[in-house]
Image (tube, rainbow, N blue to C red; front, top):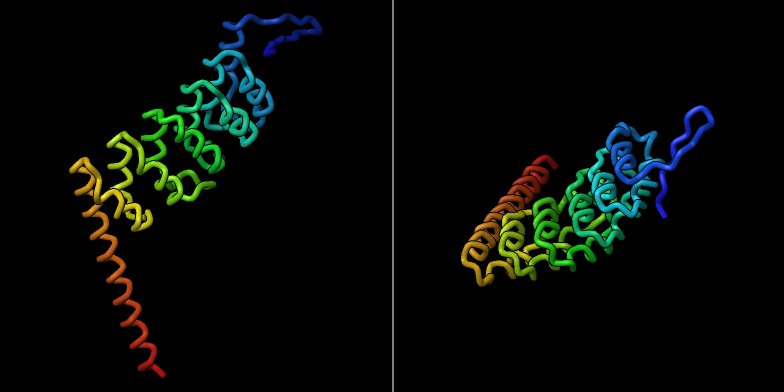
Length: 194
């Protein structure tokens, strides 16, 4: 049970939900308050957990609490939080992808490489099966993903997605060809020096 008490000069009182909400909003965005914020992450109020999920000073402890939340708006705020993205484990993010929530899927697809505890190719492999064409289109634009993902997307039933994936695949192949050429030229120059 979440209960908020305030103590002033030895006198304490339990605050109602509205007062608890106002206190949460007044807590500064500083790491030194993270222990208190972690308690708000356990609140029975979804609005409080949503606010905590969006805080810039979010901690790993809070991310670990909120990633297990069952309120979709809390999870949306969590994946939208730039700092939290660096702390969400891959297995948790894959579970969130399974929700098929359009906002979570689009946020993950648009920010694939910001989830630093996750392999982007594993996420993309799961996301390329999404029914949401915006998600697949975001993947099709990503030149850093594995070529196999682009090959799958180049056969997409939505023409725009397939065309973008083919364009990205061509761009990747041109880039790889240029890198190979640079390596060959570099090898020739080194052999001439010897």
